[in-house]
Image (cartoon, rainbow over all chains, first blue to last red):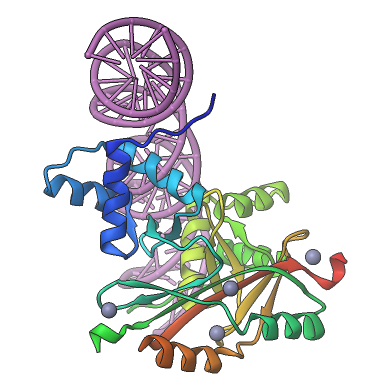
Length: 127
Length: 127
DNA sequence: CCCTAATTTGCGAATGATTTGCAAAATCAT
DNA sequence: ATGATTTTGCAAATCATTCGCAAATTAGGG
Ligand SMILES: [Zn+2]
Ligand SMILES: [Zn+2]
Ligand SMILES: [Zn+2]
Ligand SMILES: [Zn+2]
């Protein structure tokens, strides 16, 4: 039978993501856990991140250095506004896509199936 | 003095991108060149791609396998519509962002500075 | 509780894409 | 052509991520 265990290491990785609310790499999460004397192996961090991403509880993004980073994430369709200063990520609802879909179809003959969107700027707290 | 030479290998890598008009990894470009008996080392393909991306003549994207891929690209701000069937990439002008910027500011207190957007679907030729 | 089966962990080794160092080859301005 | 400068190719080094496997944990009865 294929069940998934709720283990301590998994909860600890997940807790870091929920607390930080910003994109973190496996190595960063591993370092954060270490600092609080919580020993979770890097492999387990990687495996847990894959798990969370698979369940849609986290979403991934490759940063400029080529490292894959993760952030806790709403299950429903939405996009991310990332603060350039503090790194915090806010969920943003997806509107205006209907308009774009229509323009794509009529101007390019392109039938839109999916899309990705991400915003960068300065969040309210950092201004 | 810091000049850039227009060399044969660079032109050959660039030509592949201009001809294919789809996202290609360094390895794929290397393979395509090989097939046409054009010998350019993989290192040079990598270095040329970095160069093109730096000049804004190509834009990069990490595919689902984690490989960085490149496509020839207009210098001006725009987005990409990628065909799920043939892979061809079309440049799409950026509209509707004014609306989004305004909503981000009023609903989230977020000051938009930059954004990324990418579309996936079926192009006119593939329907 | 205690036991067993199923799943997960941690470690170190393997992988695979990208980078780097350096001598030889190519390019460019004179 | 000539010499200074930049680029190339190759092999070795990096570095994030994945894997294999024995030991440790978890879930669920009995
Ligand atoms: Zn902020
Ligand atoms: Zn959307
Ligand atoms: Zn197509
Ligand atoms: Zn835009």
